Image (tube, rainbow, N blue to C red; front, side, top):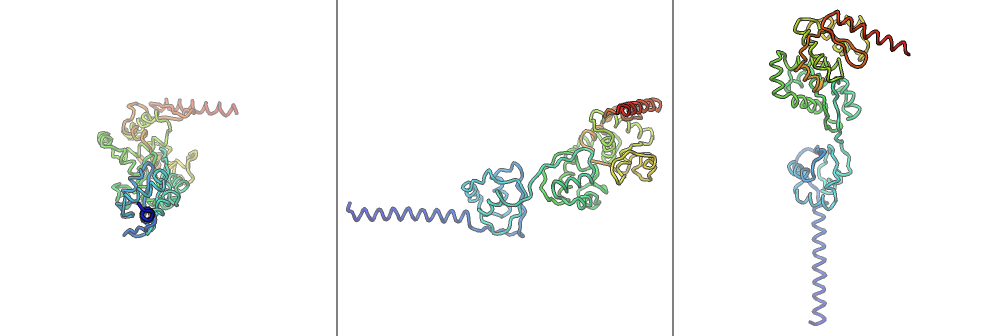
Length: 345
């Protein structure tokens, strides 16, 4: 082969390599920098939850029309190294982002993070609103208004004036700055998922409605934090209801006091309110907190006993009595214990 021929082949090799290089650059530019436009109103809200795979994120982006090619976005993610870097959060995606911009948003951009919120047994709507404001930046006033909105409750199938008692005590994954409506729906779904068909059947056999069972459970929770005591205390209240005795439950009065929980005096015991179970017979109008699993099961499966009274034992539990004589003796024991403690100080 002549020298000229060799030079020509070298030129063609160089041109071919250069052409391939240009094509790769064009392809990469197309993948990374070409704007993507969607039909919805901008910005589009997009949630990435803890545990979501990059592949599932691609699928949902394509379904919402935010990206035009799942394959190209996956390639971009692989090259960018974003497959394992994307954050769990609620993103607000403006229109016209390239794949590079979108990956940058998911890895380093601003979002509302998904956080774990625990509703503890015994929390009220107002106390929960305070925690939502503090940890998730959800307006507490708006949350209380939403959770006590009869129209909103009925729209979700709850025929009550408030969600008190129905915002189930559990752990939830929820995004910062979620709307009050979304937060209530999440917590109420926790209740519906827990209150299974078998529990509904048990409720029917008990002779009470679901609302009445949750009300009893909330009072039981208001009386004790000890789960092992709950069936016995529930048994006491079932006994009182059966014989037509006033419940005389301190927690129902504590619920209506504006200043929160405090030592009750005769003044508080005389408050004219349907929640005052010292003044009115039967159950109060509704639950006084979110009682939690243990208290609900205790209300549904109360201990079969003959107790009608109980008083604190000074050690975190209670002493139970079948009649007024036993109760007065237990009260005496409690007062003696308190007196001895004061004398030691």
